[in-house]
Image (cartoon, rainbow, N blue to C red):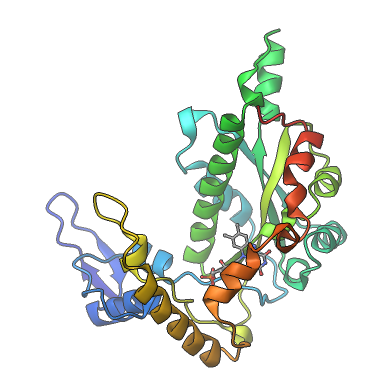
Length: 291
Ligand SMILES: Cc1cc2nc3c(=O)[nH]c(=O)nc-3n(C[C@H](O)[C@H](O)[C@H](O)COP(=O)(O)O)c2cc1C
């Protein structure tokens, strides 16, 4: 890291910035397809975002005091639809409570190991309660649309918290398995009706002995559509990506899995959803009508 001047006429500030070659190398690591030019602009925020990798190996060390509140301030700084703020988060630090949730969420050991577990909620209970206080009822919260709003709000908030954590040298990983047993998770967290645990997130200090690399993503050729959707590039780009992923798996000492087949297997049929095929029923049980 070196200090460089940002050539901005209004705001000439000095920030820690990677040299341009290192920035280009990191950027190229994201897709590994050699298509991206050296970035014309660069800063620490981009470095943090593009350097993301999920962390599942944690040191037992506690987080510095105030970290949780800082992460939640970052989460609350995310955009939120109509400023409704239809999300909440439950922070779990008690080891026994964390272990119970780990068991419910696919028995993933890293949940026990990390000092902090955050469970991000789509929270429509709060707006119901606010309306009830004024002796008013709201019907709109029973529509699928507002459920989507809650899920989107929760995801945006969570991502901001994760980036904030990574900017502090912490690591984390999202936990979709928190939806494996939605009613049991809701009971464990004492959620009111009309609140739903969208996903979890473990946060802690990355164990340097279990360091991982940036996991490559699909080429921008298939995810970036200009003006209208273009399905034509998919075939070649996906074949290339399967090769890139094979290389990544080899480097990381991971089992070789064909990415295309992995995607197909993950969504092949109801059984492939590993219990989450009953999500509509679970949501109804939790007070979501999804009209
Ligand atoms: C909503 C969501 C749920 C996830 N659930 C899990 C999970 O339950 N267990 C896990 O090990 N990783 C989980 N992940 C992490 C992904 O596997 C990971 O983000 C993906 O493989 C890309 O790797 P990277 O984050 O290191 O770039 C989840 C990620 C997201 C966004």
